[in-house]
Length: 444
Ligand SMILES: *Cc1c(COP(=O)(O)O)cnc(C)c1O
Image 1 (cartoon, rainbow, N blue to C red):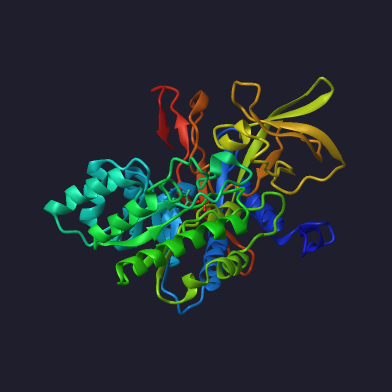
Image 2: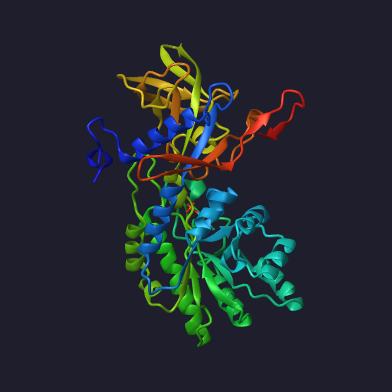
């Protein structure tokens, strides 16, 4: 079913767009957006997060032991991580900073998974002391873990990340299972299978297999095919050793998100169907499972809104200069072909703007010409003082800003809407602001 066929009212508005509009109007009324003092703000729909996590949990059979570990890099705000913990998730971290954020969000260390291709000795000591799960990215890291375990006991469950080398998707920067990816142990490279089998034989504490095939742009069959290689490898280790040493498989994340409508497709159900087909042994009940979804949990539950400061016509084309650019939409600005975003036009009071579509550019505030959120986009003609909404930005956008031009980080607000339509906000991150006297950036 296409979004255009689905659940739209007479004006062609989806329930999700109506929810954004309601949120925006309330935000303007409450001063969370203000043309003088709050030029840009971001919103996380906490009700939406609850229902997305519920759909993830229900996609896997209850009979399996599954830990859904949210990939913190997708949205590392501590209150967001806390909301995910309260929904029963674990947390996947890839740096000391993300580990600190996960602990601050209250995660039990046993429900945190530490993946990174560059873990330092000190980071490994800390993770192993806390009992955080660790996936070694290669043989050198395994040797380092040997050294650490020689002097201290650890309750961590430990695995190895394998690269199933199944190939890439449409965005090479997001494809981690290519023949030459920097991540994990490439399974098909000369001698690696034998070395890995020996590594498991020598280390009875090595009980997990990890893989993460890629993120946005990878087709489901590619991801599921990579997971199947990891499951086959786990079966091979156990057969080779004649004991069930590998007890768990971490299948990574990477479910792609559609950025072109309010539909959520593919859903977790569709992915689990592909997994059942490619990797039936994953569902045998013989293995514990960890997942590491990030984008698919948060992207569609967040949006940004920014004021249009000026408009002009250049070379015959209307351009709206807004306060959202590369500082909050870094990937879209630098790789617009790979990361297109929708833009919605709103009046200054937050209501959806009407009017015939006019092709225009939507630019950001940064001082370089490529700072464009969208090129040649047909929208009601924007005026100075209007608002633009940028949907689907809950993951990897405003949560990890880029400090170009020393632009301050916008506030992030959590949103809930009750059955009566009443919108309530709670702060998830304060805005940074420039103190005119002290001349530094500070939390407001
Ligand atoms: C980035 C990453 C994820 C999450 O990817 P999404 O596309 O956000 O689901 C999971 N696992 C690892 C190891 C990652 O690097």
